[in-house]
Length: 341
Image (cartoon, rainbow, N blue to C red):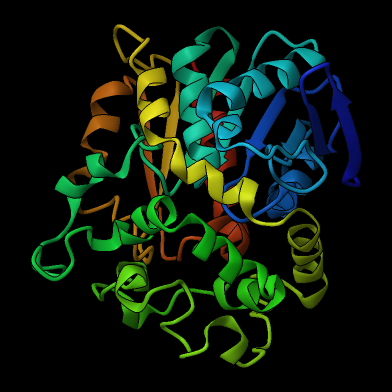
């Protein structure tokens, strides 16, 4: 079945979304992260749609053809939850399977905690439960052998602090040439990078995201060919066109609401996810070492029916290893949701 384009609006928000599969099929909602689009789920949309699911992937607020806002506070998780509730209610289904990646994982986990009545199962690519608040909470998970505290106080999370402390610098750097930036970012992981320092630890030291690649910032970087095992030139243009049109204020604002997101999380008296949950580890993700570090312990404590799988991939798992991701998702849905108790 073909992937089709749609838009749904309420008085407060418009969600553009891609869809594949019969509308009477089991609803699956997939939420993307930074700096992506609904297009990031193209392989999963087609796969799940052709299995008979109604697979849906929205552009999140601040992205693509969904609503854009000009205040940081518009990008809190509390606001995003309202978007997702409105979108879910639009389909008139009892429940959905929620699948997220990166900031989209934070969204999926939050739906599971704040609105369990609409969740049949929740899956996350790369990101464990408990993220999306202030990055100070992540510092206990920093490998101090790799990132000595006196030299790298924020470890691999330095880039998030840079977003908060130097928002305009980061935004302006990225807006210089989003196409070049995306071609540099959307690449396969190098197995030789396993256990090596992440470039995200160097952002503050170098005074900007792209100073680590050239003394004059993004303009000094050569125009590399896209890694077509991850994205094509045509797909890069779609991603880039929207970032040129909308800018990075919205996408980057997701990073600066940590205290508000923590406050939103605290309205829950007791964290428990009693329905099927899936976490897929990316073994070559230089920032999120979920497989061997302690950062997944909370996920294991909160989820009473957790499945963990691993893929030898980098952070852009859904695009880098779509066949492996699709097979894991299909097996988990079959075993835990369709055939489960």
